[in-house]
Image (cartoon, rainbow, N blue to C red; front, side, top):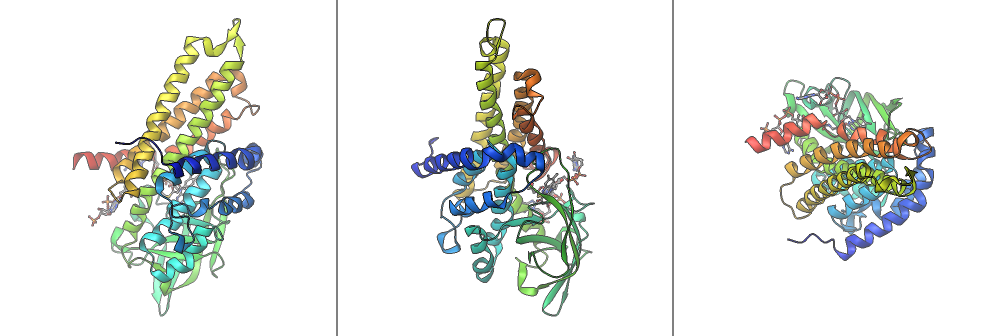
Length: 379
Ligand code: CAA
Ligand code: FAD
């Protein structure tokens, strides 16, 4: 067993940490306040190779692994959870299924653009009536000659409106339940495809979340991703890795909140000494640090399993479950350590607490992670 990172992984961590500190953190509070997505940050990540971390160089990636990828999401989320999820949705949800299920032509055309960061990706599964219950989706895709015609709408789409390439799921056979779902690649300017309402959110406010509308949207037949009727499995297998990206986001948010809390506790004096010297506070910090470390180990383990080609569905669901709950708990405690100041925008911990909540909801709620893990441990 080896718990040390490789030299390459350590170097990547340092590079992303410096980038996050210099280019992401300075505007994080302002972008949150203004609900503003900054494409320039994504472009700079592209210049550093971050947009294609796990993909082979022949497809525009940097040929690294999934541990490096989760380290990058963690380091970005440590200062700005919105930037963390931009990259996570781009790599895990949009690029991964094209890498895994795409034809050579699709990989050359779409994965290379995504990996190089020339294009930004999104993943459109959820609908107003189909969140946890994916199979009940209603968006339809009908084959008509050389095209599929898409009709319906998707909701809650991360990178919606700002993405260039969308992986979209629709029913090709409405009578076949999950076996009637297929996956498609849709380009942003396709006629009949528009962006609807942009959500106003509690947290990750500089990550745009929008509705997508398809009205007689014709997409070429060759943009079917994987086999017709196999889209549910494409969606589930994509989420297996995506959940670990969110686990990494949660670890980053929690670590950022702990860092702030430790600094504050060492500086803030009450009863004639720094509050860090009060056992009630240092015990909180100890619990926070311990739970973050456990979350990180689960996350890196799932990423390692994926990199090694070993099964990782359970590990990934466990990582997301544990890290998401840890992020919520740690950020709530971080506000507590800061007292009244923590409740104001003078310190970033209130933003961390608002951002943490989503890690318990998206890419499958905590209840769905328990369902996935529960099924696997009882089968
Ligand atoms: N890998 C491969 N196959 C899988 C699979 C997986 N991980 N999970 C399920 N399957 C297969 C099953 O083996 C089964 O196959 P057969 O029919 O051949 O036996 C088939 O898929 C149906 O599986 P289930 O019976 O388990 O399906 P279900 O309807 O009970 O749903 C569920 C299972 C886990 C609840 C699933 O619907 C689910 O994950 N729901 C949550 C949705 C979700 O996470 N959405 C996230 C949207 S993206 C997002 O949020 C983005 C963001 O954060 C940025
Ligand atoms: P519901 O499924 O209606 O759940 C409501 C409650 O019931 C939850 O507590 C849930 O856990 C519980 N519940 C449901 N079923 C069960 C069950 N079987 N057992 C126990 N409890 C259950 N989707 C995308 O496709 N792409 C994206 O990029 C994307 N990004 C998102 C970004 C944000 C900010 C948000 C808020 C959502 C995003 N989503 C995205 C959607 C997200 O994945 C769903 O919100 C999530 O899967 C839950 O679905 P729902 O909101 O419909 O809740």
